[in-house]
Length: 345
Image (tube, rainbow, N blue to C red; front, side, top):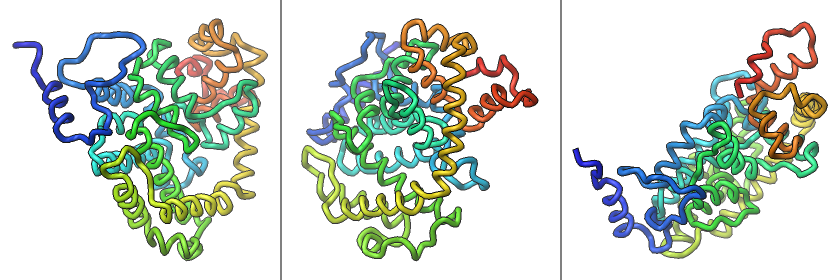
């Protein structure tokens, strides 16, 4: 059978025919840092999406906190379900604007690969410990560039890497697809964190700010639909991905409300102290006992600063694994975790 099926070329032709002139075409990617043989059937962005899905870091997202630590219940979001939420919203935005949905999906699936255990609390702790600082978007890029595949990295395209590192509100993505993911991230976590906060009993639906709810809608479904529609109406046919001023202001006000009522509260601060105690304890231990790091990270510390490598290891942990390692190091009678188990990440 002939090796070239023509599937990828058909995708290229369809993109030229139907995509917005401002979309990132797959055939026009700036490529990878290391050249490699192309796939006969998949575009480079489709390959990037697949590489992310099958990465170890992606698999670990299912056991990392989104907002609530070890919640009692099956329907609270984790970092993985948040990632799926972002992907769905970002793809809806891209599809409506005739952008490259494959690129959008790859960025969305990879945007939080470097997130710490214990959510943003863990990120703040590592940022305070590492002399060079710590940011989950930069760590996500380090995961795909350096840490995956036993140090070889995933060798992703420039556009996917750019979208991952620039997905925060302060970032400036080089593509409209990256901008779609950045907006989708905020839309997803604000609305779905509201649902989780109500489920946890921290909020009641009638406590949400009336003006913002009047603008965006009473339910998560209505609010997401309102914001996606606003992005479409303000961006279609233009070299931009933006939300209308009214809806954007309502989203930011709703986000500020969540910081006041959910993200920064006495309860969340208590949870953050718990995260700080565990992560700080492990950080200081491995700083003094480099030889106790797993072999991969010991080798990595010969090339990069030890402080960074410890953050690599700690940020890779799931919540449960972080607790188990902490107990192994500091609670003598807790031998549920064997020394060889620490080598698994």
